[in-house]
Length: 286
Image (cartoon, rainbow, N blue to C red; front, side, top):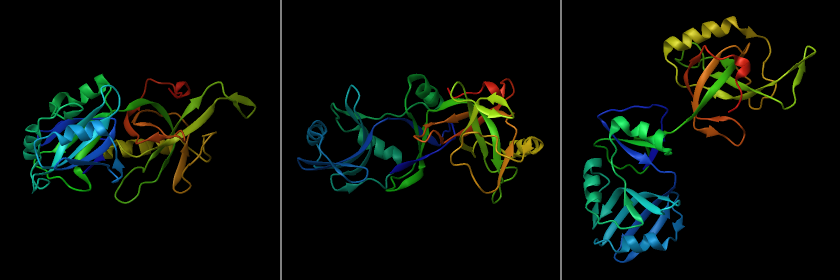
């Protein structure tokens, strides 16, 4: 079962929360004393320490799901059980699978993933530098696919960006489709525009989540008043060619995102808010 990435940050009694580990997914199959390990894409894995620990468990048949982390201490974090002694457990509710897992006498490097208090899970993840939090819907079964009954909330980076354009809305969306944002690059190779040296305005990507209807309409009204005929970005790769509008770079946003891609674009950005206390010219890549 694979978790679906969400940009939401929530606590809810219908959901259970666990730590998201920054590791490699691993499925473990035990039959008698024989243990086979596979990656999520079904490639065999040879990790003797894990195989030996699973072989010692007092059950003839097991299928376990978990995550390996290699940093000290090396561990296999087991968070689900799919089969035990001739019995398929994937159709059992989450709570019953956890009870079965709790009864297994795990020894190092095996570790049991525990439930976190929902109200403090996200704050703890950010404070302790975790990769994120997994939210699992209570009562859910184990599905052999990506599911919205498991949601992953990754800890984010955040900084300001300046709006340089926007796209038209599609379908039932109102106001605008996405904001096209960038930042200023200092001390590289200033561009001469109208005889004046100016720092480059670098395109960083587009933001399409984090809006409500009121904000979409409010921003569209502001952007229409700032529209210009040509792009303000002086360095840009991957700008949309259709249904794009350009604006004077005067609106500053606070944006959360997972990471910078290898092409220097924002991965999974979402709008956190509009900044009124920041000069657009002071917005640089942090």
